[in-house]
Amino acid sequence: MYAVVGCSDCEHLWLLKDARAAETATCPRCGKTHRTKKLRQFVEEDDREAARQARAALLAKRGGNSEAFAETAHVAEMERELDERGVDDREYLDGSGLDPDAVEAAGERATSGRPKSKSRKEIVREAVRTQESPTTESIVAYAEERGVPAENAQDLLTKLTRRGEVSESNGTYRLL
Image 1 (cartoon, rainbow, N blue to C red):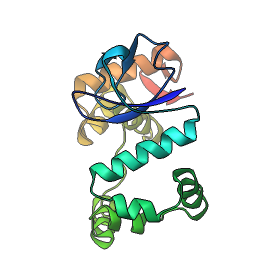
Image 2: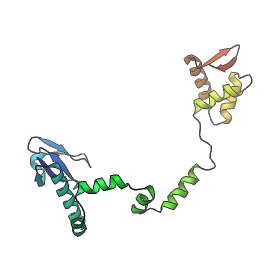
Image 3: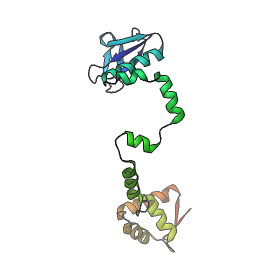
Image 4: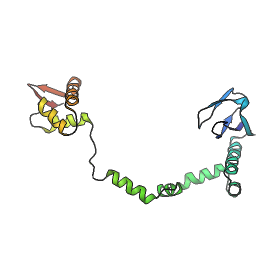
């Protein structure tokens, strides 16, 4: 048995299976826990699909779209059609009230002209790899030039050495 129930806080409608068997139910939107005896049951159906259809009709009525809902296919059929057809990004953005061209341009601006940022650990590794004779001082200086504080660079170098990712011999480091 499935029931369409509503939250008294956020007015969300959802399906609840075996409303009589459970003592409480949690609203999936706002997270409030309700005693099932006190929940308002709008519809009760034996079949889950029938309950889904009833919920969809209630939501359409609430939104003032009863006539449009009456002209559409069953909810399950609409989902199958959407799954088969799919909605491309442009159509989704446009339907959401966003200009797809502006979104695309913003994405291009955000990524163009900027090199991929590296983590502090990657910068210290790069310092060891690229220098001819990497010493503690030269590695720290290299990292500082790239925005890593000297103390952090020193700590990272020590950690990499302890982990066995970097070795030190006579004050010179190398990646392993």
